[in-house]
Image (cartoon, rainbow, N blue to C red):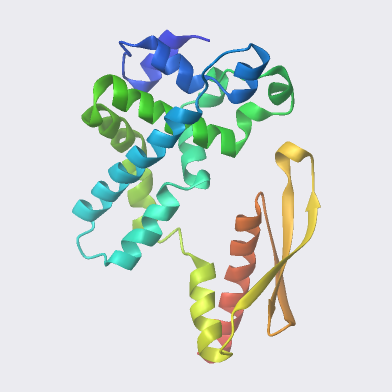
Amino acid sequence: MNLEKLNEILNYNFENKELLIEALTHSSYSYENKLCRNYERLEFLGDAVLQLIVSEYLIFKYKDFDEGMLSRYRAYFVSEEFISELAKQIDLGNFIRLGKGELNSGGKDRPSILCDIFESIVAAMYLDGGYNEARRFIITIASDKIDEVIQQNIFTDYKSELQKLTQKIFESLPDYKVKDETGPEHDKTFIVDLYINDRYYCSGSGKSKKKAEQDAAKKAFLMLSEHIV
C-alpha cells in the first residue's frame, strides 16, 4: 500500500498516517490479521461530514431550490452510486486493505466497499486537518459532477415521480417485486417487475435492487405520462 501515492492523489499529506491506514482497512482484513480497528467507526463520522459538505454546497450555490429538491439531490449525491464513482475516479480500490476472501471475490471494485472507504477517508481527513480540508477535497473532486447532474437534469427520482402520478391516476402506489438475480455474488444484476393495482406494467434491471426499481419506475412513468398528455 503506497500511502505517499494516495496522499498525492488526495492532494493532502496526513500528519497522522495511522488515521489513513485505519480508514483504508476493511473489516475482512482486520479480522484475518487480528487487528483492533478498521474503517467502520470512521465511516460513521465520514457519512455525517459528507452530508454537511454537500448540503452546504447545494444551499449556497442553488438558492432557488426548495427544501424538497435540496433533500432529493443531497440523497443522490451522498448515495452509494454517486460516491462509489468518486472513489473509482481516484482508483481508491487499489489502496484498500482487504482480506484474501474479499479481495478474491472482487471487493476492491464493489460499490458498497468503495463508498464506505471513501467516507472513512473523508472522516480521517476531517480529524487530521479539520473541516476546511475535508471540504476542499470533496468540492475539488465532486463539484463539477454535481453541477453536471443538476444542469443536465441527469438524475431524476422516477420512483418518487411515479408515486405521485399513480396516486393521481389510480389512487394507489406502484408495487415492485424482484423477479430474478443473475451473475456472481459480487456483480449481480437484479430484474424487478412493476405492478400497479396488481397489474403488470414493465420490468427494470440494475446492479442493485434500487437501480432496478428506478429503471422500472422510469419506464412506467414515461409510459403513463404519454397516455395523459
